[in-house]
Image 1 (spheres, one colour):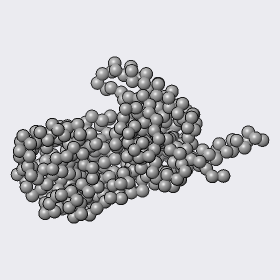
Image 2: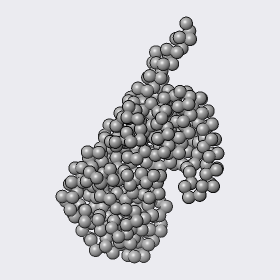
Image 3: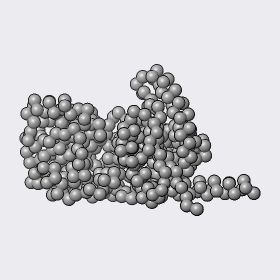
Image 4: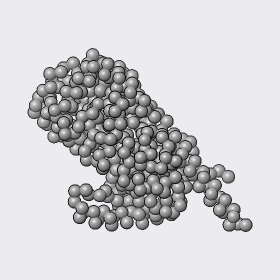
Length: 384
């Protein structure tokens, strides 16, 4: 009798959680086309649009994150967590999964807690080099923990850890171009070095302010071209301020780089936040990167992600507080230093794990098989 795999994937909130989740789902489907996959996300977060657009069903929980600045507001958050746990339990009961996968983000906590309590095997995908509080709690009952960095025994039982790396957007791998083709596609000058500046899917205020503050320095270095993704939130303001300052010809401003594969292929140097998903993509593509960790994330995990690379001479670090003084200068210096670029590329590519999604999918299906076998044995015993 053919098995019917039923798998819940929970998490989201940012592209850094959604893209890996979709990569895992796609890998499961490629191995088991008949698998039923249900996503559980947070209501009113971007996964509620992105997941259906990718062809998967999703249900939302009324969950929210803790407010670290105003503790009184967390009374409502605690109520929402309880409400989300009740809803997650109903979803699990109705869908009857054999495995629940958590990729991080608000919704993964209630979903995996309820699944483990209902004896459904759970798998955690920890993207960062420093584990968050929720995953450390969930790990106690998880069957497996897939990680992207060495040394995660500091946070999790070593016997549950599987080093897989982080899944990346499949489209990025499929669409990799050589530099000359990418430069042409982006309408850039193949005689000039190229610096790509991104601040995550929503943009980054500090990075944007750092570029505006150094418009004259960019103008003075005409042999280097800059692609600057401001993020949709900041685009109108930043474009107006750049125009007022006399936007240099070697600075391309956009709200969102839709052709990221070509932009990354064209870039000699990339400036970025230090989200785990972004770092995994840079590693896989072997890009020289300057990392500016966001200070607004739990447990400062982006700084820890960045330092894991910096310590191996696989990335350059600029503190968020020093962006105006250091970022553009370091980007220009690095773009002009061919030896430095070559060394950074050589070292970061060692962090790349091209088969991460497939390895995680295999682990999910292995847990599902074990659960199905156990259920079948139990049914046979009950018939005796």
